[in-house]
Length: 134
Image (tube, rainbow, N blue to C red):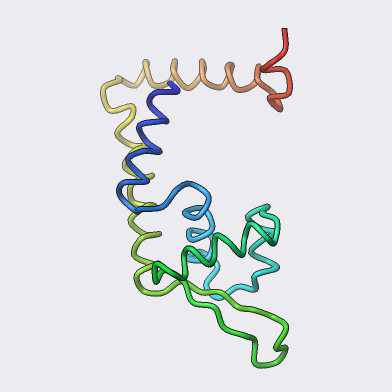
C-alpha cells in the first residue's frame, strides 16, 4: 500500500512539477478564490514563515498572484492565476481518476471487503500516536 501511494505522489509531482505542500496550498487557493494569507495559513495549518516560502515558489512559477488589500495595506490577498487554476484542476481530475481506477479490478463484493478491511485498519490506527511504539 505504501508503494502505491509513493507511486501516486511521484506521479503527481511529475504531472504538476510541485511537491505535496505547495500543491496543497495551490489547491486551497484555487478552491477559495482570492484569500488573505493569514486565512490561507490557518486553512492549510501552515506556519506563516513556511507559507511565505511556499507562496514565493508558487508565484515564481506563475501559479499565483499576491496583491495588497485596497482597504488595509497590511493585508496580502492571494489568488491563483489561470495557469494555477489549470494545475489545480488537473490535480483534482487525477485524484478523481485515481480513486475510481484503483479498485477497477475488483468486483462489488471485493470492493466492499476492501473498504471494511481499510476501515478496520484505520480505526486501529486511531490518531497514529502508537504506531512507532512497542
